Image (cartoon, rainbow, N blue to C red; front, side):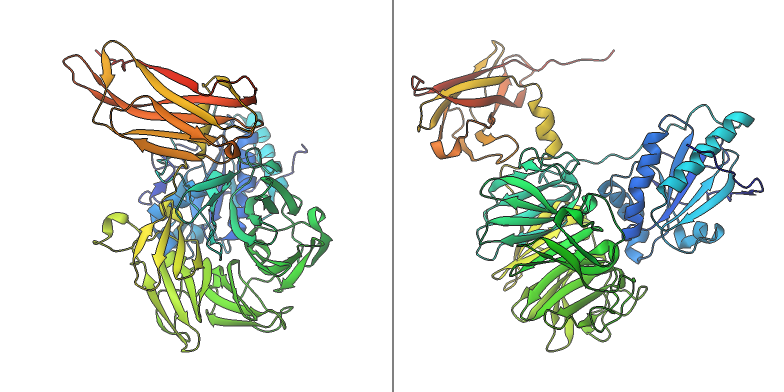
Length: 639
């Protein structure tokens, strides 16, 4: 890399206020002490901002390239919205965006003002002596940032100002949710009631369930990437918006951080990319076909006829994709971030993030102007129902002309009403367009579950909503769950997914299991008899329930599961031929509890697991016996 000629006249960087909170760090950091001798990159950001999200891969690139060298990235979170000022919400956003570096909470924009920052995102680079070298505003500055960091490291080696290594900072962790989901961004309840689709965004996969919560299929391996292929092998990166084509039995997915549109064939269980190059582009016109046309953070989708509408959050526009020809082009919005009504070519939008349609109108949540807007499908005229400007937000119901929202991300239609996920107010609201009013129907405005009174629904930055009949499905994003809400009587419950586990748990738990080939007669099903062999010092807990599960690995998780009465072993599972595929692997689990026979009287839950691959064999036994050895846990006592 070419070394830059950087200015030598450098101002000493202002120190961080000692009283400010930090997240993603085990302590408050100081430029003069902890960070002395390091090249420091200050990232001024706010977590709602799509442009700030676009900078994160550049920062990750720098962190990986210079890993182990005295280079430190520090996020300076200077909030735009009131909701973004809460350190808890910032910490949650760091987890959602996989941010590994420390972040200081810039109360009242004090650090922002001290450094003379004027816009999000802005990068300020400091040399190892704690002096300001330069400022980079906006996105798309990876190469410039890389060159500055490289040059400062070279300078530091020459003049002996570099620290030996970066400081050791312990980052925050996050407990895996029992729901099996991680920050689900969008949910789509298919109109016929057959499917409920969920973007399991931080697990980089898409869940296909039935209305009872039974998981039918999982598309995505759980690894970040953009590979096409089978549901088990395909990769996504922060999937968000969903649109289902019932005639073709395919699901379109906005693969946001890959800047792609993916097509999931539910019949063949294959994933293919139909639009996008995999790289972010700054094209405001489009016009190319399919994988030759670059995209910019597609966030939501709506399928109307053969046209797939795309909420292109990154370019502040609405685009369209012809599902027959795969031609892709801009459809509404000038590309300038603002709120301005009028014809589609000149209207200004601001990070459109959620779609719904009714009649001749496509409704959308325009998040950065805290607005709900609509565009005529025939004339492309854009109109605003709620919303005033980039810095006009709040939580006010009543007449639409006075109402305020705070960064809404989702909309849905129920009869003649428009429902809104008022994301940063942690609420669901109902717009009566004919009456010109809006009211809150769900959510308290608080986000802590512990704050809920009996029967009260507490939401935490809900990102997506969908209606099927009189049922509203809510992606309660930061609570890692989906809520099912009755629009007639306001009753609600968590949409519990049966047979879904966190992607990382599944990957880890299967690594040690040996593959067992099981013979199956052609056209016949599989009968499994599961039993346990207990060590002498333990015995089966005859009062604890016994649970069994059978499912394909990487696709359907639990096709067959159930419980048997306590103490009843062995357990028989009957798998129909229709549920078997010789090209797939299957996981069988038997969960039970055992008790020790000594004076400790311990009762311990445990799970036996087998990894199977079926093979046709006309001479196969009618029953396959599977047995697992259970030994007591060993206690380690530290002196």
